[in-house]
Image (cartoon, rainbow, N blue to C red; front, top):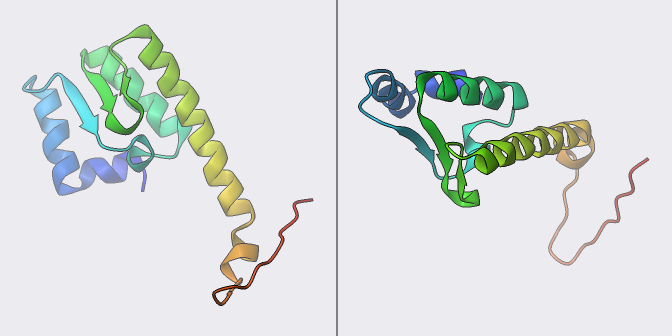
Length: 111
């Protein structure tokens, strides 16, 4: 789900409106990768946060974009999250058809 899809959900829309009205100074998420796995989405959200003077806080990685180091870390995490998503998608056909019973092992090799 992209950031824009989250924003259109009930809680996402409520949080977005609170930020826009100045009733909140931060968007707090439990897990950064649940916010978005798209580097572009996270970058846009971080730019909006900077422009509108609110912070993005991710509890799972102790991230706070109101600090320079937090902003840099958010960019790095977004990059690796997108990389992970692309890896999953690139081998999705192989792994999705793999069914194992308990005790079975299969060695996967990447070309």
